[in-house]
Image 1 (cartoon, rainbow, N blue to C red):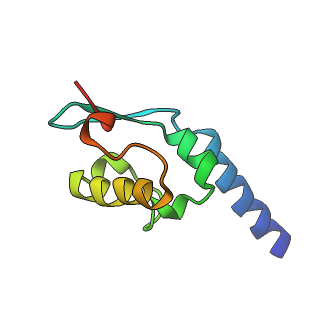
Image 2: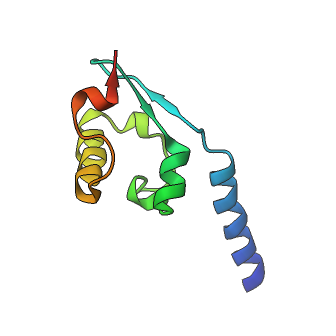
Length: 90
């Protein structure tokens, strides 16, 4: 039983990674934001950094969440875009 549960968990985790979009286009009033989802998955290896409440669409979380979470992480890691024009392409 324990092996079955572990196997099911591993398959679910792998399926999420296998079917994740490479790039997600997020609508924004100042221009679309191209979010490289697969690149973030491979680099962070921890979905909970962005998906605290479980699987869900980042686009539905909103501008304030994205600015706080994404820009905050980029600033903290000293990696990735932090200025408006770096993310918002017209």
